[in-house]
Image (cartoon, rainbow, N blue to C red; front, side, top):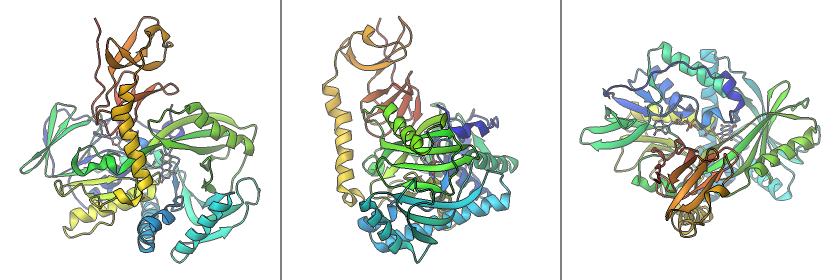
Length: 493
Ligand SMILES: Cc1cc2nc3c(=O)[nH]c(=O)nc-3n(C[C@H](O)[C@H](O)[C@H](O)COP(=O)(O)OP(=O)(O)OC[C@H]3O[C@@H](n4cnc5c(N)ncnc54)[C@H](O)[C@@H]3O)c2cc1C
């Protein structure tokens, strides 16, 4: 399922790594985080190479809804509760800085990316959330242009709102394409289809293996590949979970004056695409739970039909994002053991302001050894949100232990053509996909990240890990990390 933004993707014929190389800095990942580091490094004459395991600009950043805003749900309240008022304000200030940076780049570089300044309205029709909106307003009003408002003029979306003025929406693909053009015209070394399959620590730095074949020697790595891939160092799998979210672009006559983020259940967000298209997103849940995906899309369809019953679906898609349990991103030294790997992750569905501020912080770190980042990755997070911690442990236990104990025996012909099933076959815990009447694909039911079980997603025809968000296609090829290896094929003679 392609997102609406893919219409504007242009293949730049970026090369693949085909020999051993050496570089002072290796950026892993060509999504918004990696690209913005590349842009900042280029501007500061810092030499580097960027590699992406797939096509650059086709990861999560190509499936976002691109509200560029500091109206980050109720994160300010969450950070206040988990840390302090001060920390919540620090987060706000950093996001305002991110908003300024991206505005500045669009202006300075004259990137044509359908920029439209408008308010973002955090909204709710629920009394409990009204209090949260008021608390959040009191917390941040001194530092940002916000205002409490009543029901919208059309009266259809909410009863209580917190308006953040001077935010914007844009086309993220046009923006990324603009950045890539600038990088290419400045002879920056970009490589795609060059998956990092191993990172070996050496005395003088790292030897990074690409596509299990070529070596890149480097003293420093910037890991911007969405979810951390070096395990078990710093145990990121106990600090971050992945959350899926769905989006639909509708053709509609409805006009909306702002973009919206609802705090109510079912959660949704809404923005304009062009004068006859709106995008609605939501239906979020922990990746890897057994859920009826059609129902998640239906939540969005139902919401849209309450606004315009004649709206027509044009595109629908899903993606997932990294959610730190203590509600702060991770930007800085990977761990005490690996201080020369700089990690960027944990944007919790607010990647545009976060990636720009992260790229600036990382550049400052590289230019100045003493620079203090604000989202230190080696902070202690586990007790900041015990509910999320126990939920993550529960998912991991289920994926690693319980679901492996109870695998049903099925007959192959019980699987519908074009569908998959987890089953015990010939005594092996297997993932079976039925390609045609007599053709089956057999894979080992063991995620190549940390060994968790997988489930079948029958809407998108994918295998999803129950624990940490890795997703594989029907043939076992990894399409979303943290896994970096494909699932093991099984053959039964
Ligand atoms: C449905 C949805 C809606 C969202 N809407 C908004 C929004 O309105 N506003 C907002 O600010 N944010 C939003 N977000 C969040 C935002 O889209 C993400 O936080 C952001 O795009 C993440 O960027 P990234 O660069 O970290 O990841 P990606 O864009 O996924 O880039 C990571 C890259 O790393 C590569 N990679 C992975 N592993 C390897 C490897 N081993 N070797 C080499 N390369 C590798 C991948 O191929 C990929 O290209 C949304 C998120 C979701 C899920």
